[in-house]
Length: 67
Image (tube, rainbow, N blue to C red; front, top):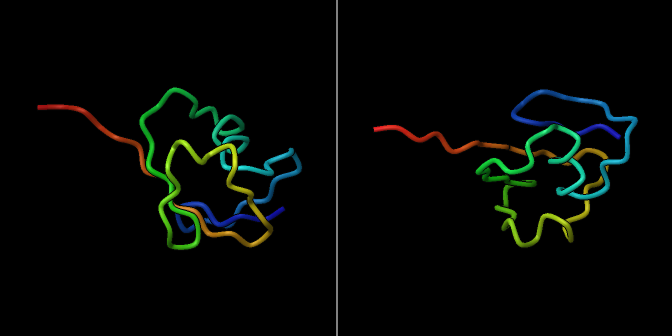
């Protein structure tokens, strides 16, 4: 499967069938993330239900704290 993540084309041999699987595969579990799939925000509550297909374009942004 090929996905474009933050503007870079990436190929995956591992199972990355949902946004939740991708987050786990990228070792981003437990982090504060915003994920956009093909121009639409994916609510965290929908990560497990949101299917990924070959060619999807994702933007993944992590929250940064500070003051």
